[in-house]
Amino acid sequence: MAAKLLLLSAICRLIVIVGLTLHPTDILLVGTENQLSFNRSDIQSASLDFGRMKTVEPMAVLHPASASDVSNLVKLAFESAHGFAVSARGHGHSINGQSQAANGVVIQMSGSRGRWSPEVSEKLMYVDVWGGELWIDVLKSTLQYGLAPKSWTDYLYLSVGGTLSNAGISGQAFNHGPQISNVHEVEVVTGKGEVVTCAEDKNSELFHAVMGGLGQFGIITRARIALEPAPQRVRWIRVLYSSFSGFTHDQEYLISLHGQPKFDYVEGFVIVDEGLINNWRSSFFSPSNPIKISSINAGGGNVLYCLEITKNYYQHSGPESIDQEVEALLQKLNYIPGSVFTTDLPYVDFLDRVHKAELKLRSKGLWDVPHPWLNLFVPKSRIADFDQGVFKGILGNKTSGPILIYPMNKNKWDDKTSVVTPNEDVFYLVALLRSALENGEEALTLERLSDENRRILNFCNENNIGVKQYLPHHTTQQEWMDHYGEKWPQFYKRKMEFDPRHILATGQKIFEPSFTSMTRSW
Image (tube, rainbow, N blue to C red):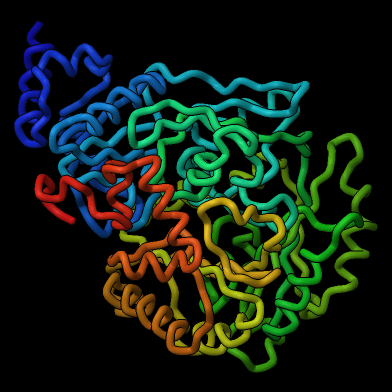
């Protein structure tokens, strides 16, 4: 009884602040009694994200047990006199407060009480999962049937709904497309509180809107993900380049191979700091035998480029079964002679490689720090200009995180979704995944890295590079209109249809809420 009275008191406080035209007991009748939390630790957790660059407190946190809980809360916000912000939060891996809800309610999708387990259909090769399910748990569930999703992100401790609201990309995207190209259907709670099942051929406008929609049109409560037979082992290969043109030529060649032997994963990264080749994302190179940039014939340059590729295989066939195929592919590449580094490992270990690096960083207190990440899609025609202006220009020889670069095929992306990419057949992801460190080095401070990000964006704008931000962050609606370009009218129309009161994902700062006067910050 005491706990219920405390909850009722907190609910009254929420009603007074946001102006709900409800009796306090009414909110208990919509099924949130055991899930709506005003606990200080929940509030503080929801006020931060992985970026750790801003703190915005919600009024409450909902731990849903079903889509109905999500629907009931959103319907309350939609039907109330003044409305309040509602944001879905998965593992909290956003960078700039996108999943925060000022003076509103954050729905904690990941780790929610009573959520249902993934359901695998072996016959139809799909898995149904809760929107807050982490990809690592999806993988563990599907592997019990010898199956796995086709397309991944590099880090598996992200929620399904979170990555599908952006796109979800990794080194498999050149072949399978992003994760949003591998979804059969989703269940969505719209900004009106309606629960809608949608797919390519059913409520397709909502389906395409929420795929890469940044949470603007609905909250994904269930997704049906396409599966394939899971490989058992991976041949993981890294080769080095001193020539940027040689590096990109080989990457583009590898992603052009269709209907013939090819690698299963193609990524790459820029090395401007000797330490990164040994420490980034894995213990790929032996600590007892570190690789030195100075020991590589880099042609006198200060920048190296590492091509990262994999070939999947099955345990019973043995690694020698793919030796010939891998060798034939490598013979067509123009990397630095003698710079081939190879390891074989279980498929799961490869997919979960970043988590191992996370554990190391956590042990050193280097994980919960600001992350001023910048992710850009760069058109193929301008990637050499980007290299000259950014990798060899703006960036110094010290960095505090990986700088990824790899190409993707545009024909693997559905233009009907909300995602925007450069209008070329091939475009690159350039991801500056850096951490701000207060270790006495000015080059690694949050202020310095944020300034470099601004300089990079200014360089791209001034030179008409034509980049599009991935995991975008803009601060004015005009910037968002420029970001979406010719897609903006459609994006706006969809918003008016599915979230007319601008309740959802206000942390993205795309649309001003209709209840702005009730919030503490914007």
